[in-house]
Amino acid sequence: MHTAFLFGTGVFWTAAYVLLIRTGLRERTFGMPVVAFATNISWEFMFAFVRPPAGLMHVVNVVWFCFDLAVGYTLVRFGRSEFPCLPRRLYLPALVALLAFAYPGMNYASEQFDAGGGAITAFGSNLAMSGMFLAMLAGRRGTRGQSPGIAVAKLVGTACASLALLTDPDAVPRHETALMRYLYVGCFLLDLAYAAALFAVRRAERTAPVTAPA
Image 1 (cartoon, one colour):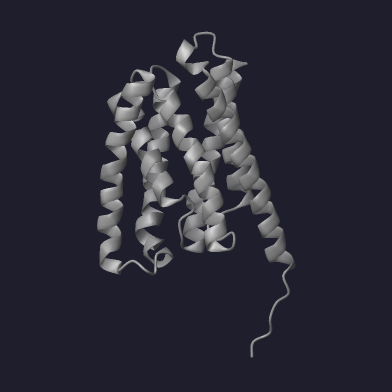
Image 2 (cartoon, helix red, strand yellow; image 1 turned 90 degrees about the horizontal axis):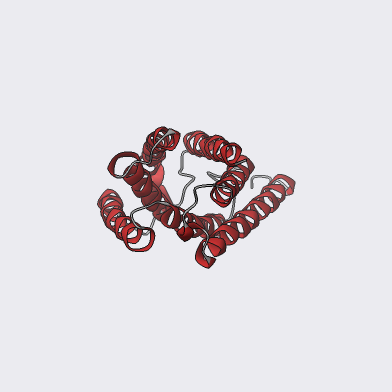
C-alpha cells in the first residue's frame, strides 16, 4: 500500500503541475498563488539538490522542480497584470525578493522541526498553499487560471502523500505526531473546500446569462 500511495502522489501531483502550466499558458495568467510558488520551489530545490532523499523520490523532486520552473515562467510572463496596484518595474524585483526570502525560511524550518527532513515543511507549506488557492479563487472572482482538474489532482495527490507517510513501515516518530495528523487533515479539508468552491464557481460561470453589448 505504501508504494501505491507514493505512486499516486507522483502521478496526481505531476498532473496538477501539467494542468497548472497548460491552463496558465492558455489563459495568459498563472495558476499557483505567488507565495505558494515561492515556498514550493524552495522546497523542491532543497530536496532535489541540497538534501535529496534516496531512491525514486529524488528523481521525482527533480522533475517537480523543472515543472516549478515552468510555473515560474507563467508568473514572470503574465504576473504583472494580476497586480495592477504594483508599479510594473517593481514586479520582478519583488518576485526575486520573495524567492530569496522563502528559501532560508524553508531551510531553517526543516532543520529545526524535522531534523533536516522534508515532511513537516512539505505539509505545512501545502496547508498554506491550499488556503491561498481558496483566497485566489475569491480574489479573482472567477476561475481564471484554475480548473477542476487542478483542484482534484491536488486533492488526491496530497491525500496520497498523507497516506504514504501513514503506511510507511519505516516511518520515524516525528511523522506520527499530533502536528502531522493536523497537517494531514487540514490539507485534505482545505483541498476539499477548494475543489467544492471551484466547481460551484465554474457552474455559476457557465450558467450566467450573457449580457448583450450596448
